[in-house]
Length: 297
Image 1 (cartoon, rainbow, N blue to C red):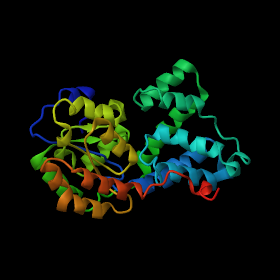
Image 2 (image 1 turned 120 degrees about the horizontal axis):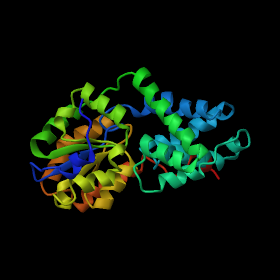
Image 3 (image 1 turned 90 degrees about the vertical axis):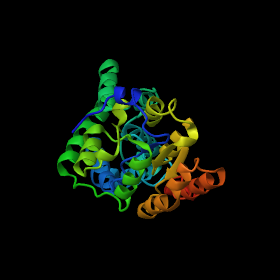
Image 4 (image 1 turned 30 degrees about the vertical axis):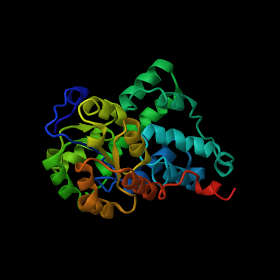
């Protein structure tokens, strides 16, 4: 199992005139629900002793990590947002001591790669309690997922799509899933053979991945981001490329539509304005920005 470095992105050599970046969790692998509900959220409750407000923690974490415009955030960004929501929610803050995520917010907004290595270095340098706790939480989370989580299935239609992409485009994995889990998934199911690089947060954020590998090598209309989260859409908009959403809850249908029309449209010159807007409108309708407990206020 090969581990990739930034040099693999920086020195990327095109073989085709089109480039596809593919997200992993929730896009290729059906991991989001089980990974979040059975591992991420219980670990937050245990690590910070929030059992007294378990329903509120789960609601805030599920909204942040799964069912909102924040879906797909890096784990530290998601943790920070979860704590911010809880501290703003009377039903939570009045019944438990919720960690102050201020230092975590500074780290998340620093522009550096959000990984275990960088948060540990920041915790050691600053002495921040919340950063140290978040690092320990993340390390144990990796261990639990690696040793206890069932192997996630690949969504129906994905391998067929990857085979077709490999025949027509350069392709890499662009993800914010930590490398220890990311590489395990792609090599276990023998999908790594369809992509040239598997990039996680250790190599930067998704814009960094595209910038290093593709931006100066392909016209914007010849670059495609495939993802299931608003962050994937934002990445595509930042670099000005095409975005094809794998709609949460409709993943199999989304991959079939990709094969039936989406990929062909991309290869034929990129998505037109109307087609791209149609995809985005359908995608955004599935992910609200306001938590359920605030919608009636």
